[in-house]
Length: 141
Image 1 (spheres, rainbow, N blue to C red):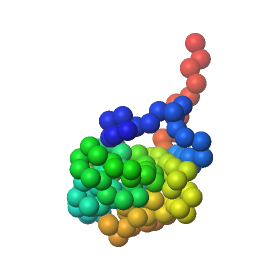
Image 2: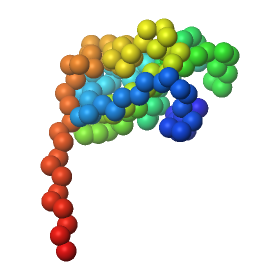
Image 3: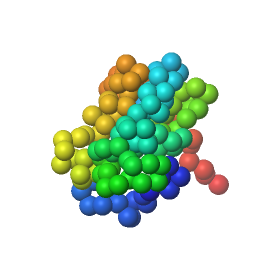
């Protein structure tokens, strides 16, 4: 699994906790920059436990032994994000998954997000939420 190839829902392990964040949480511009810098500094290939890509942040239980060598590290969870939305420098968090392994260690959707967001001085519960548009009226032809 990597940033471009997240695990398909059918292939997910039993016991995972996945939550769609509705309305989606918005990481404001200034905090978004701080979070991204800190996650990069804490990359699994640099002795950290995070791997942050443009659509997926993953949290591991320990650092890797190089760029493509997880060396037995266990995935704790995934934070699905979209960069540049709703505005150019904001980040939207729209789904979070905690693996069975992560759950057994005491992780939750909120604690996983809060660890990443803490680098920007934020918590999931405090983030502004996306404005949901009213759906269009049904087509009557």
